[in-house]
Image 1 (cartoon, rainbow, N blue to C red):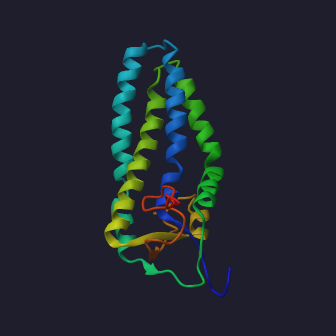
Image 2: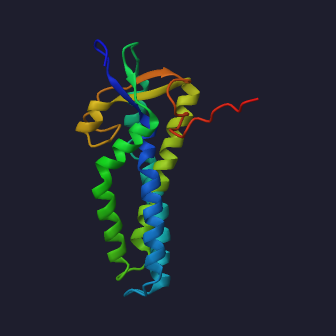
Length: 194
């Protein structure tokens, strides 16, 4: 990094990084869990899982919104020496840092299917859906403010990849066209060649 610059990762990308693995591992665990009759029976397991899916989606999507809003409200402009991290690098770093937790959660969801079929898998999928909703909320805020939100990479390492964790002191912001991710953390669509 050049003189005094910081490595910066997109806030929405960090939030969104866990959505796909949680969703797909949860759906897979729920699908496998339905095949096991379990102690409570499939019907009770699926109904309990559906309820937990809804609750988890709502809780994960809404938790710490005040902290995100406060950090976004006080975001300073990124400097010319700051290095903007690519979307793919941010996603890869988050998933590498959480791979063992994801694997343990998946195995726990599979194991719990012998007691309550599909419930824990649907809970995992709900957490993934909640992260997608939260990243979409951040994206709408970025669009409204006309600025993308960034967080220092070294703060993410200390805070285990939480962009609103205790280690994060402030956000930086750039123009809406900076970086390779659209508002909300999705891949930026390239213009079609004519």
